Amino acid sequence: MLNLRYFPTSWKTAVIVLILKPGKDPTDPQSYRPISLLPVLSKIAEKIILARLNVHLDKNNILIPEQHGFRPRHSTTHQLLRVVEFIKEANDRNQCTAAVFLDIQKAFDRVWHTGLLFKMITFKIPPH
Image 1: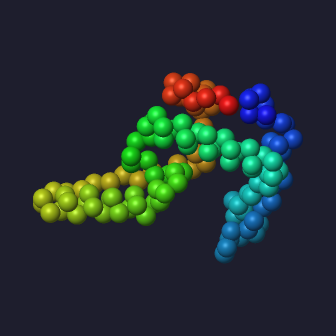
Image 2: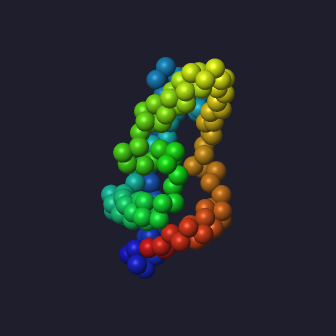
Image 3: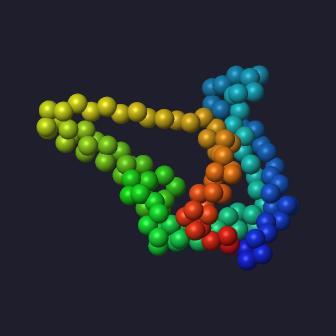
């Protein structure tokens, strides 16, 4: 399947279940969190692809050391510790520290697919 670069359509079909967020108004559609229930074979294929992608990224040193999201053995706790260390070091030198934190709403839904494919080609990500 992976060598054929084919992902069956039936594996792309999810059952959506809406879960009410705690303490939210059940009459407001924004009060629900959609949960996608995907076929097991789809999840297995995604795990295989992710494992191969991670091997390629690690082997070719594509990710910067500061990238902690979605990486094994790189937790947000580690990243938070780095931020605290930077602030402490600046404070020790009587310097000010400024930070900007972004939370991009619906980031996954807004991915520019053409740009993503271009990046994958640029970084020589294997097609299978």
